Length: 112
Length: 115
View 1: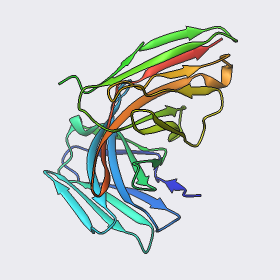
View 2: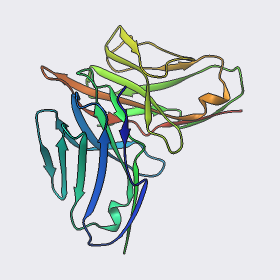
View 3: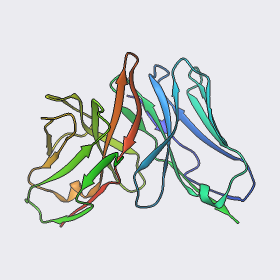
């Protein structure tokens, strides 16, 4: 069974620093990988989707890398802002039907 | 665009009661999903559907039922509520193309407490 782990569970950085969020998975036979943002009491918002054939995906200040052989993905957020404070979840797509196996998330606080 | 809409947002049930969580999407997505999120845990898949009339179990289906009579709607029914079903429930949808499912779009969640 695919296991997805996100370490650390919580992270605090001063405004302006770059954020590095880690995600590891146990089975390299993935369909895709998605990063989500979740604000308190809200639903999940998709940030980036990386297909299994891709090595990275970029959107604005966000960049996500994927290394299937080592079972890792990293989400980079450049020049963090207080508005980036949220929980970030990594999810591995296990098949073409869109079923996802989620990590528990990393709670990020960006201090002014 | 409303996206994925879930109702109710909050509900308290007594043990043994039943209820239905409603989910509607207006993006004409074929794929729909129900997840539950417990504190400090990742989301777990309850049921999913790849089109009207087609549903299948996810990782934690016991105590739940679903139906998909239209593309837009994917209700989740809880029968004989138990305290273990206290959770936040999320509905999601995804487009599909020749490569399979794309990114998932989530509703804002339904917080259920069973006492």
